[in-house]
Image (cartoon, rainbow, N blue to C red; front, side, top):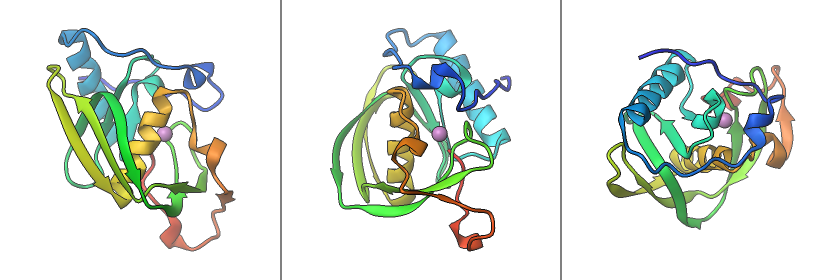
Length: 161
Ligand code: NI
C-alpha cells in the first residue's frame, strides 16, 4: 500500500465526471488499498478517487463502523433532511453547513464486482452523498449555506471527507 497525494479544490480534476469501473483487477484493488490508507492517514471519514487524481467511480468511507469500499455507487432513494457541518480533505482548513438527506439508500459493487445495497442515516448518509457527489465533479462548497469559522462552537467539528 502507498499514500497517494490528495488534490486540492483548485485542481480541475475535481470538477470532472468520473468514469465507471469495468475491470475489477489488481489495479483497482491497489487503488482501493491506497485510498483507504490515504484516508486514514489524513484522519478523514471518506475519500473519492478523483481526490487522488483518478477519474474512476470509486469511494472509500469509514464513519466509525469500519471500512466501506464502494465501486460504481448509485443513489437509489433519499429521505428526510439534515443540516450540519461538512468538511473535505480537498478543502483543507475549511468547513461549511450543508443540507443533506437524513437517510440514503444506495447500491454499489465491491472490489470483485459483486453488487450490494447500503442504507445510511445521519453521518453515513451525509458521507455517501458527499463522496458520490465527488464522482460527478460536485463539491460541498457549491451547496453549503454558509462557511463555518474557527471560533464557532467546537461541536461543529466533524470528520473531513
Ligand atoms: Ni470531499
